[in-house]
Image 1 (cartoon, rainbow, N blue to C red):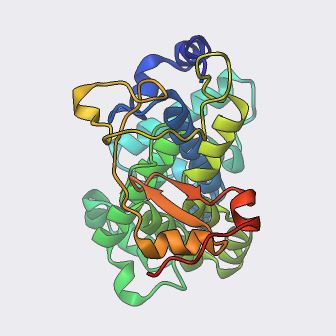
Image 2: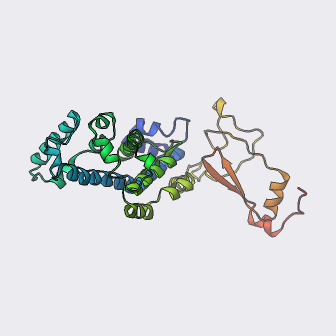
Image 3: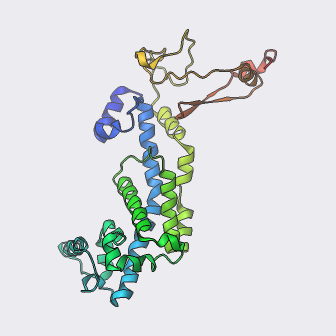
Length: 309
């Protein structure tokens, strides 16, 4: 990748944000591929996170309307809101007024932030009784032991954290439990509404993007912005014979310029035989991307004598 081009990308996206994707010294192509994959994963999580948030606030609104016998329950004396939640209600009302919007229950529900709604599942509302009421009211399809207030509080804390990171375009690519958190979001939607869960699953693309991994993005980056070797020819995909493996620790240049890594993959006689017989080898490089090896077509048209494995 042209270094000047990458520096301009780095400048507009901000160096500190880019640094999160090259902490191991990744080259520009790999850095941008990781950035792209993270962006795609975040995009794929949007539907489930949005459904979870909207389902939660609407379910609480319906339950609190029943409990307080009015859809203006956030203004009643017996709503048992915490001081912080009351402040949030005041700020939501002011925001609507500042934007010259009439204050209706529906607009108030939409204006109140996610933390306001997840804040019902904590110790404070365990003491007011509202938390236990909601835990046993808005999750009609949840297993009984999952309606525990502590479990719900921790689940929503994790979902809120994931939601905030995704909505603020932060890195989640490296999370070891990202798949489990994705399943948790879908699960809690199912506890509130099986129908909404069915729609969320139909729209969900997370598993496909996650399983495809980094390779599609790395290929896209390298296809559009190939590394140039001396003389202006694309260097990606070139093959050179060297006397010894490249040692990244020494900082030495490879035949293609500076590179990170230097992992050595050994080919056996069985591998060579497979290639001579027309098969392709897939090499897993540092668990990041895949390189495919095959013999040139003229080798296949005039094969050598098969090697003994």
